[in-house]
Amino acid sequence: MTPDPADSGNRRVIRGSSWVMAGILVQALTGLGFWFLAASFETARTIGLASAIFASIQFINYATTLGLPEVIAAFPSSSRQQSDILVTRAVVATFSATAAGAAVYLAAAQSPGVNHVLGSQVVVGWVIVTLLGGGNAIAQLLDVHFMVHQRWRVVFTRNAVVGLARIPLLFLLDLERAALGVLLAMTGAIALSGFAGLGVAANVTGFVPRLRGQLSGSRLMLRYAAVQYVSHLALFAPQFVLPVLVLADVNPEENANFFLAWTITTVVSTVPLIVGRVLVVEGSREEGTNRQITTSLVFALSLMVVAIIGAIPVSKMIIQFYGEEYTLAADLLPRLVLGCLPWSVTAISLSVARVRHDHLGSVLVTTGLAVSLLVLGLVLVPRDGAVGAANAWLLSNTFSSLIALAVLHRNLRPDRRVAPGSHSATAMAE
Image (cartoon, rainbow, N blue to C red):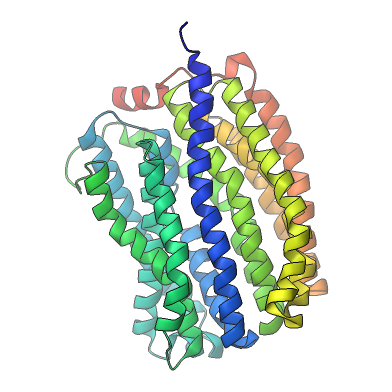
């Protein structure tokens, strides 16, 4: 009996997603240990200052990806040389954009808090932020590169090692400026995994850095990157704009509480994004069948339900392990994780739109989320602080999921299918 190709595609979506999520789970569990130890040895103010810079570095990464991870996922090439050129140019462009973003950030964000963490020497601060942010950006690109080559264990290993390495780094980086030591422990392993990942890619996928040479279909890729970059900015606005809004309106102690709850929430919210990215990789290889889409959506929603149930005992553990100083974090967590349920619908719908090359659908889904979050955040955060941010997250995701369902319904129609390999085929023909 001949195996059903659709079943094979479904298995790859679930297998690939499971490997990546296992790595994220290790990172999440070790992250809880990291925060427990950091809260035991450092004040909430120190944690708040370090987490504020960490959130800013994440914001720089968010603003400078240029849509390139999506291009690597959507345009798999059977030519090693073409793949090498695409990945190399993506790495150079992303790192350069990160360096520019770091310069803009430090020019605009000079304050006693920033100087306390990074020091008063602007050039030194720029080097720190550029290396931490640039390494993180390269790690994200390489994760997609490994996914395209179905090297799921490599992605798992990177995430697991990064999570485990943070804890000893917390003790090794016992600096005079405690907040800088905590920041480097948070982000140093991630950045190192990005730079080291270039060597791993050379051994695992045969990657060779190539800047010269003609990249087939580059104009099509640039157009696709431009659309996906705009969608990326809107989709991830909640994860990076919301902490900035909170930072601007609360004291360091309340920010530390929000950041702890938000860190756990971002891990949870990463799950449907992982499932969606694997769907883009596999859907671009085949035709993005409705069975693959349904499997991805059900898988993501089921995991979110488990996470919502699990948030209740985890919130109690926060007070038990971190102390009464983090009671607010325990109160915020269930509400924030609940918002991940409608968020998963949005994430999968956007991935389907990417597979179908439905640029209008991508813009509608992401714009609905970004606008609703920004409006609600600007209204609720100044009034209610971290609690207002949690409410804005839940309400904006609920609203945007309604738009996402409409776009998903449209893309499930038979006339919306894209022929197998059409992305790469069109690129090669251009």
